[in-house]
Every structure is written in C-alpha cells, then in structure tokens.
Length: 431
Ligand SMILES: *Cc1c(COP(=O)(O)O)cnc(C)c1O
Image 1 (tube, rainbow, N blue to C red):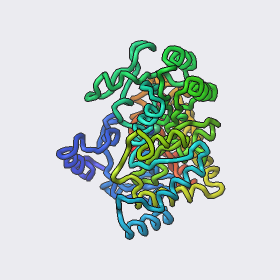
Image 2 (tube, rainbow, N blue to C red):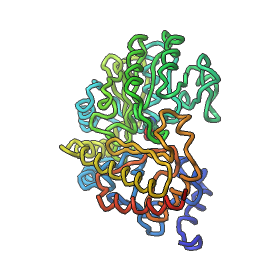
Image 3 (cartoon, rainbow, N blue to C red):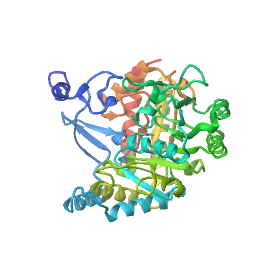
Image 4 (tube, helix red, strand yellow):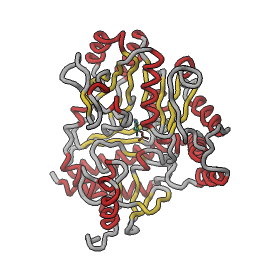
C-alpha cells in the first residue's frame, strides 16, 4: 500500500476537518505510534476490514466488549429483534430487570444494580454514591488506573502523600480534585499511611483489581486484601472498577479470582456486548441511597436502553455456557506464549501475563507491579513492533499502555498467524 492509494488517508483528512484530531476518543488517533488510523468498514468474527479492504486480526475488540467476536449470530439476532420493538422508551422494560438479575446472579457482591450508558458515567456515579452514603468527601485512587473521564478522577499524585492530587486535564479546577488522593498501585506502606492519616474522611477507594489501563498489572493478593480490610475498618466503601475485567477475565470477574467482596462494583464493556451500556451495583443498603429511594441523584435518558440490554443479555448468556472461559483462557495463553517465544528468538526483552480473554505484554525483562515500572517500557521498540504487526494484518492497541483482548472467535490458526507475524516484527527491533 503506497500513500497515494491508501484510502484511510483521505478519510482521516476529512475526519480531521470536522472532528478534533479526526477521532471521537483520543487513543484511536495513532498519536503514540505515528501513522494513519485504519477506518473500519466492517467486522466479522475475529477480523475487521479497513477502508482499503485489508483484513486485520483484531486484538482490541472495541477495547474489550467484543468477547464473542464481531457479529455473533445469537447476539445479532437478539439486537435485530429488539430494534424492531423500539429503540428507546424512557419507561421501564423487562429486559433491564433481566439484565440486573443476571448480573446479581453472577456476582455475589451485587444485591442491586443501576444501568447507565458508559463506564465513565458508572464510575462517576459510584464515586458520588460512596460520598453520599458515607457523608465524606475524600476518595483514594491509584496511579495508572483509569476510571473514565469524570473530573474528580482525572488526577495525578501530588508532591507528597499528605497532599492531594493535581488535575491531569485542562478544564478540571484544582478544587475539584482536592479530595482525591492518588497512591501507588501495589504499595502497601503508602496505603497504610494514607488510611492512618485520612481514614476518618475517606468515602471510598476505587481500584482496577487487574489494572488494564497501564497495560496489564495485577493487584497482589495482600494488596487487595489490605484495601478491603482498611475500607471496612475505617468505614470507607471499597469500589472495584471492573469495567474492563468484568466478565472478561472470568465469569466471576477479577473479584472472584481475588476472592474479594467490593461494596460497589463498576461494570461496562462486556456487559453491553458492544452497545453503549454500563452499570454500577453493590450492597443493598448502599444502592438504596440512590434516587428515587435515597438522596444521591443519578439519572439517564438512554439508561437501560432496550437494544443495548438485548445485546448485553445475549452476550452474557453465551459466556455463561460451560467451558467458555476455559477455552478462551487457553487461547489467550497460547497467544501470549507464542509472542514470548517469538520475542526470545529475536533477543527482545519480553514479559507477559493474561487472564481469561485479556492479556498484556511489556518489552521488559520482568512484569511491572506499578505505574512507574510500566513507564520503563521501550516506546520506540513498541512502535516498531506495532507497525510491523499492522503491516502483516494484525491489529493490537496503538499504544504501549493498553491491554489486549482475545475473543471466542479467534481460532488456533489466527493465533498461529499472529505469532508468525510477530516473529517477523520482533526481528525488526533487532538486538
Ligand atoms: C474503559 C474503562 C472505563 C471507562 O468506560 P467508558 O465506557 O469508556 O466511559 C472506566 N474504567 C475502566 C477500568 C475502563 O477500562
């Protein structure tokens, strides 16, 4: 493909004239890796096709939701049937109840659930609920975790532990993040100190139990246990942000793997199966603080949308089938192992991890445990690998700090072709 025949280029030019940066979410713009984003024309199973009709094996899956692959027949059928019956009513429907029941049935920590339209909305509402339920203002978050783009969560660590965070985006007044304390992931000593200093004022602690927004970093068992214990002891709410890990790493989500019971869980991505749908849910006494029962206000015109709930329900019903996650996890592990041996052959440092249908890899000798260690990754080498794979028809996240996703539609042959492409791409990095 030469620049003069690449049909993605004129599309990107048109996009840039009318949409800031040409994209509706920044990471799609390829700013980190350079080059022109691929404009997707259609997708099926494990693949999508760009404006040139070139096929890519898709390891983003809409950044997580497409756990069954694109256009799964049962999901497509459910969505088509639901669309015929109406797109949106602004009045309750049975499917919302079914989805709430399904989520509560799968996650023992959830007694009640409220459906919303995006993970950002769910995370923002969970924070408001924690503050409303406790009557406290302060929240704890961890560096490298992402909880959507609500003001109070766009924050980086301040100069010291006793100081609160600084905004990471223009347009967020410092006063708005004044109550957000940012700590290092997996750092027990900092966690203890923060609760010792501020425990009585902390409304909630929010964490990705497996962090998927700094590539792939697991919370250690002692760390997650201590988070739970300190929240209980100090009367703060433990909020698990499982927007990415929920029904992606396993049927009981990351909280099941880590055997921890959050007070509030934030969900998104897979529960919508690719439609705009997210949720937050948890303990009955906490959820009953929400309007119309309680004083914490939260609402949404399209919340529990009938087409989105049909898509989400059909997706959850497929992933509940016996053996689903065992097969998905094995396929994902095969990919990670194949990438590992390809890197080793080329003499490129490599460390990787996976759980269920989610994986991450680093061009480092060992898996990082926190954000500063993730930042040691070699950006230039990653960009060479990214473009090497892209040219060979393999689409991974166009940024170093993102997790990857395998779907049930990825075949053994797809994994094999990916590993072969990686063998060639790793050689470009050289020794
Ligand atoms: C994607 C994500 C969000 C934000 O969800 P959106 O639907 O993009 O608003 C929040 N938290 C985590 C952990 C995520 O991965």
